[in-house]
Length: 414
Image (tube, rainbow, N blue to C red; front, side, top):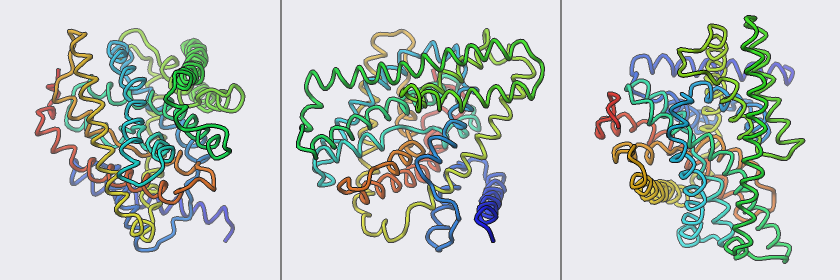
C-alpha cells in the first residue's frame, strides 16, 4: 500500500473513532466531545495502535490552526467582544507575561529546571484553548459574555504567547552561546524589547489581518455567489497567515484573528449577516470540527506510556501548578478591572475562566518546535502533552459540574 493510501486509511480510521465518540455523546450530551476524544487517543496510544499520522509543528501551525482560529472568529459576537476588549487585553498583555514569570520562578523549585528552561516551559504551556469547554457553554446555555471573554482571550493570547516563547528561546540560545544571561529578560531593556516585539509582531499582525479582512468583507458583500465567498474566505484565512509568517515576519495567528473578525464584521449582531455569510460560516464550523477532531485525537495519542511513566511526577506537578498560576493571575486582575468598571465580571464567571483555561493546540505545537539540543527537551514535551491530556480530560469532563455549582448553567451570569 502506498504512503498516500496509508494516510487515507488513517484519516478514515480517525473519522470512524470520531463517529463512535459522537454516538456516545449523543447519549450523554453533558460530556465534552474534546475530552472524550483526547481520552480515546490516550487509549489508542496505550494499546499500541498506530494512527499513521504524526503531529508536527508545520501540520498544526500552517495547516490546522488557521482553520480553527478563523472558524472561531466567525462565532464571536463582535459588539460583545468590543465591549469586553479592556478585560481581554489586560488578561492577555498583563496576565500572560505575569503567569509566565510566576510559573517560571516556581518551576525552578518544582521541576528542578534552570530558570531559563522553566521560563521556556511556562511560555509554551500557558496559551489557552477553549474549544473543549465552549461546546458545553452552548449545551448549558451559558451567557454570551462569558463565552466571548474565554474565547477572545484565547484568540489573542495564542499570538502573544508565540512572541513570548520566541523571546525566551532566543534568550536561552544567547545564554548557551555565552553572550548573555537570563537576567536580561528582567531588565528595563529586556522588558522594553519584549513589549516592542509584542507590539510590532502581534499588533502588526492584527493590523495586517484587519486590512485583509476588511477588504475581503467589502468583496463578499458585493457577491451572492456562495462558492466565490467560500474561496475568498479560504484565501484570506491561509493567505493572511502565510503572508504574515513567511514574508512580513509578523504573528500569523493574530493576523488570522484580525482577518476573521473584520471579514465577518456586521452591523449589529449575527442577525444582520446575509444568507451567503451564514452558509460560509457553517462550512467553516464544519471544517473546524473535523480539524479539531483530528487534533484532539492525535494529542491524546502523542503521549506514550513509557514517557509518561518516566516523567509522571513532573506531569502531575505541572498540571496542578498551571491551574494554580492561572488562578493567581485571573482573580487579582479581574478584581482590579472590576474596581475600574461598572460592568463587573462576577466571581462565578471568574471561577469558570480559571477552570476553563485549557492548554492544548498551541502549546503542543510549540513543544514540538523545540530545537534538538535544548536541555530537558523530552521532559518538556512530555509535560506539555501530559498537561494537555489531563486538562482536557479532567477539566473538560468536570466543567458541567463546575457550571452547575457556580449557577451559570442557565445563562444567568452577569
